[in-house]
Amino acid sequence: MFGFNMFHEISRPFSMTYKCYSVSMLPGNERQDVERGGKIIMPPSALEQLTRLNIEYPMIFKLTNKKTKRITHCGVLEFVADEGRVYLPHWMMANLVLEEGTLLQVESVSLPVATFSKFQPLSEDFLDITNPKAVLENCLRNFSCLTTGDVIAIKYNSKVYELCVLETKPGNAVIIIECDMNVEFAPPVGYKEDEHIRRSGADGAGVGMDEDPSTMMPEPAGFIAFSGAGNRLDGKKKKLISESESEPSASQSRQPYVRGIPDYDYVIGTLRFIRNSRPASAKEDTTSEVPFEAFKGEGFTLRPAKSKN
Image 1: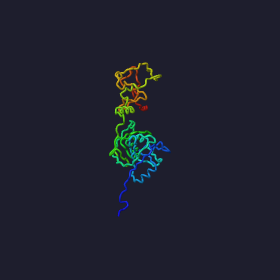
Image 2 (image 1 turned 90 degrees about the horizontal axis):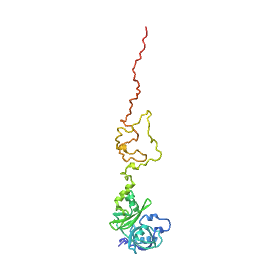
Image 3 (image 1 turned 120 degrees about the vertical axis):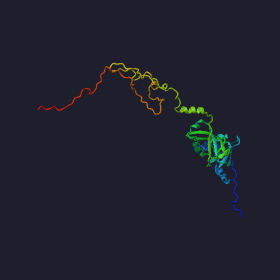
Image 4 (image 1 turned 60 degrees about the vertical axis):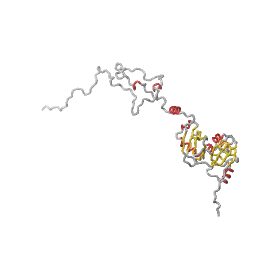
């Protein structure tokens, strides 16, 4: 005798034609979760038919625009669309060159599990992301599959980045659900290494190091305190140039310190005290002066007086 479950039921393909619309046309609140991923919204009748056909999970569909012969693949997010309609993310409609209300063929397919994928950013702004692989991994959680040649859109920090899928293995369309996939990035479109190095240097502190710091100091204007000449109380003239100052060194020849301008000649491990110190060789002529010397006279001893007896 043969049992009823002796032979496995053969799954039949699902193939329907719907009018496609962008997610912005979906009644109700705005659905940002659909725009950020690679899944579509289908009508409830599609779920009933898929259940009867014994479709394999996860449900993957092939979308075909018969007018332009453009093809892509996607998953399904919900079955809440109006009958006869499907709602797609904007980037997916751009890949298929679809307009609002265009007929779209939806077929169920089975794809291999992904092992490798390569992406190319369409803007150099993608290089500003600190960890692009981690960002891409987090965004791809909203995708069910990838198709070679598609331009997907991911959102990070309130900014949308477009990535072109250059290559997928082991096929031109792969499933990325619960898989170990190696990811590579190609240089962004229009990327030039010299310009990127120059732009990154402009954002840092490395630009302008060859310029003389003295030229960056502002010119004195208006009233300048203590700019006159000093006088001695004893009437003698102050020596303007000493022997040690006759040949100024490199540190003495630079412009005086101005608050707010960093010292570009600073050497790690050294300390520089900004103060006016008198050179040891610049000694004053003190021949006519007699310095006071304490306890310079002759000493004497105090002894008790002898009694006259």
